[in-house]
Image: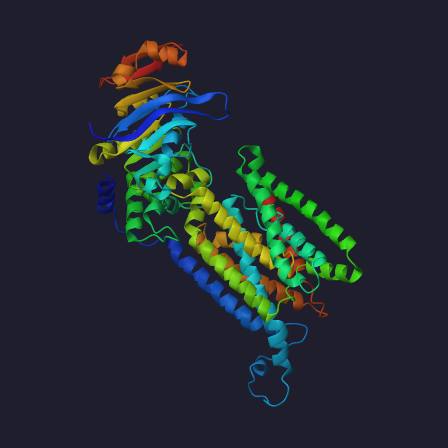
Length: 261
Length: 349
């Protein structure tokens, strides 16, 4: 393998000083990995992601991006390397899809005012085309459906031309076709450009199809970490979610997880 | 890697025309600029005494005779209109900035209690300071108390949860206004009748305090802060989307908020110190302009400055041109227009 992109060392964090959202988490993310973070509600998945984005500064432990503590990297420099796709975002309603995507170019522009140049607009068109949103570029975000907004947020993150992409439930409001589109796009970018992908998701089956490494969390700890084929076992998942779970194989050989009544 | 993705995106991008709104936005900005220039030239001619444009500029009259038209134009009307333009620009800008940072389209200096704070500050200086010092102390005292109001509002907005909802922030502003209102009444009660009369007149919000020197001084402060805000315009776009989004996209959130709130509040406080609290300019103007040119602050900020300037100058001209020559204070006019507009915004949600 190559050098680690993210290093998380003994990270502990709590929001109210009582319950630990993260409890001594340590892991490394290598360049070009495609990782899914799964686990039940409240397991600390989103908290871990937000520690990687720098939004949450953990109470204890170290978080590094390519060897440098995340807190020591200027925001603009970090945004050129690491892009985030949030679960949802309410405040962009008055902006057009294209304007939102061009916001992804902020970190590449002069820090003050920063008007978009031809290259910024070309990149915006490119990512809107990649996410299938080109026809809706001039629509205001408030007039788009949940799934369309989600794809604009993916496009905005790609417009940052990042080294690594962090996604929080990127497919929560997408139908099956668009789930496949988004993860297929991430897989192509991962393979063609070595884009490092870390996605928090509830959709274990989608993660099993596209991710090559799964990190399983429960109560703020990493309880399993490895390839989907090795991780997705009935005993582990049953104890994880507390419901009887059946694991089979789909016709292509991917694990397929189903709940039993 | 990021270079590889960038190249492939650039290679894959098709040619396309500029955004359709770009032409329209340029047209709106140009129209507003023309409106401001026209206001500066035409508004001073209108009022209780109608002035002759030709006479004002000494065209076709006896140069040796006293030129009354020119005298009124230069010493009374022009300073007032110029001060109105500066004040309107400041209030328009402050409205846009508050609305972006607090993500609340009802926010402006008046509704948040910032203008009320500045009023208390100015009146305290007026009441307590020796007569000679009061005029120069009033802006600083106004700024101090405006900042106090901002700190309260900002503290509430930073809290997560239900307290930071748009309606709650406005309620907090209303409460601050009640508090400041009672302090204002107290100061008036403790003042002598002559001072009280002056305060009352000033509280109505008027531009007739404007001498060319005041207008020029305010213009310098407003231009300086406007330059700072324009430099922040791109960041304001990202902050308007959300703190977390702005953070992810590379904006240092805390420092940007402090710079923008500080600049906007300084602007508003200086205007309040000289003109009294003039409400709703920062509410009406940004709203109409957002409809016309969209939410991009790189265009919205200059548009709000120009639009606010023209709007306030026109309101003041209307106040001066009322039949009977009453020359009512402009704050009364903007409140008459603004209060129904505020209600409409409130119930449209």
